[in-house]
Length: 420
Length: 178
Ligand SMILES: [Zn+2]
Ligand SMILES: [Zn+2]
Image (tube, rainbow over all chains, first blue to last red; front, top):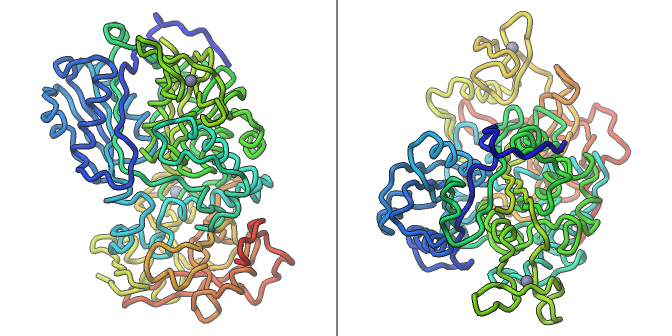
C-alpha cells in the first residue's frame, strides 16, 4: 500500500502544510469561566507554544453545537485581525475536517495561518452526555424517530452498532474493556489528565451499567476545556519555535450511506472508517502498516476498536483481539491515545488526540520526565506509573501518526502527520 | 400541527413536514405505511420518511401499507436513563427490528430496520423480566402508543404467532442481575 512520499508532486497537497503550535486549558469540571475566556486561554497557549505573534495569524475556525463562542470574539480579544474565519456546527470528527479546510483556505489565497479551536464547558454548562438541560427539550421533526424512544445520548444512539459487533464477531466485554485499561495507563503518566488512576478489566466490567453494552467506565469523561492548534504552510512553518508536524493527508466527515438512519445500510457493525481508509491512505501516500502511533477517538471504548478495525489495522471482526493484545499500549507496536484520550484525559471532541500526536512527533510530550536547562524533556521511556519510577509516555523514534476522528458510526475523519 | 405530551416530553410533528405528518397519521390510524418510490424500475420502500429515494433520487412516491413484523437486528438496553420520565421505566430496550418486507434488498446487508421500544402486548413499557426474554433474533410485531390526534409512535412487542428462537442472542454479561 505504501507509495513514495513526494513533496514536489502537489498531489492532494501532501506534506505542504503543518501544525506549528498546540495548546489547551486545564481539564476541569467547573471551569468558572466562559467559553470565550477558555478559548482565548487555549489559543494563547498555542501561540506561545509556536512563538507566533498575533500579527502573523489571520485565519480562525471553530466547531461546536452552539455551546461555544465564535471566532471573531476570540480573535478580537487576542488582537488577531482576521482575513478569514468560519465557525461550523459539529462535534467529533470536526477537528480533522477543519484542518483540511484550513489548508484549503490558505491554498485559495484567503489567508496564511489559521487557528482551529474548540471551546466547551462540556461538564458545567452543556453536558456532552445529554443530561441536565438538554434532556428535557421538546422533541419534533426527525427526532420523533429517535429521542422519543429514549434514544438520545451518544451512548444510547451507538449501542445497537456496538451490540451487533459483539453478535457478529463474538467480541467480549473484557476485550473491549482493555481500551479503557490501556488509556488509563497512558493517562497515569500525563500530568494534565483529569483521571490519572489506572484501572483493571474487572474495574470496567464491574462498573455500573449505563446502556448495554456500555458500563460507566466504557464511557468518556465529561470536562470543561478549550483546545487549539495552528496550521500554516511548510514554507512558513520552520520560522517558529518547534519542529513542525507535517500533514501528509486529511479526510473530513466521510459518511456511510444515509447517516440520519444509517442502520438501514449494513453491516451495521461497519463504521465510516471503512470508507475513509480509501481516501486518507491515498492522500497521505502511506498505509496502516506505516503508522506508528494512533489517536483513535475514544468517546467510548468501542469507538476506538471499531475504527482501528475498519481502517485496516487488523482484519474486520478482529478488533477485540487487536485492542486486548497490548499492541496499543505504550511500549507496544502501535500505541493508541498516549494522552489517555477522551476516556481519561478529558473530552474535547477530538482535539486533544491531535495535540498529543503533534507533541509526540516533536519528541516532546509533556510527561513526568525531567527537563534539561533548555526545557527539553529527558525521556526515560519507562512507562510504569510515576510512583514506580516510570512516568514517561514518549514513543521513541516516532515518524508517522494517524488520528481517527469519530462523529458517530456513520461519520468520521482522519489526519496523518509526520515528523518535520 | 399534531402535538402531545408523552413520557414528559412534548412531541410535535412540525407544520410543513409533510412526510412525517403522513407517516405519523398512518401510525395514529394503527395502520403502518411507508413511502414507496414511484419509479417503476425502482419501487423500493424506505424508512425513515424522507423527501427522495435513497437509491434512485426520485422525488415522487406513494404511501403503501407494510406488514409490520420482523426480527430484532440489534438493540440497546438503557439502565441509566437520561430523560426524566424514562428513569422509572429503566431498564428499557431500544430495538432495531428488521422488517421481513424488503430484507436483504437491494443488496445483502440492506433492510428496513425500524426503531421502537420493547412493550408488552398492551403497549405498556416492558418490565425487567420481559426485557430479559428479548434479544437479537426475537420475532416482533408492531404496536402503537397513541400520543395525540395524528400522532402515535410505533413500538415492538413479541409476536405471539411467530416461532421464537430458543435463546435470542443477549449481551453476554449480566451485571447485578439486570
Ligand atoms: Zn518522558
Ligand atoms: Zn427509487
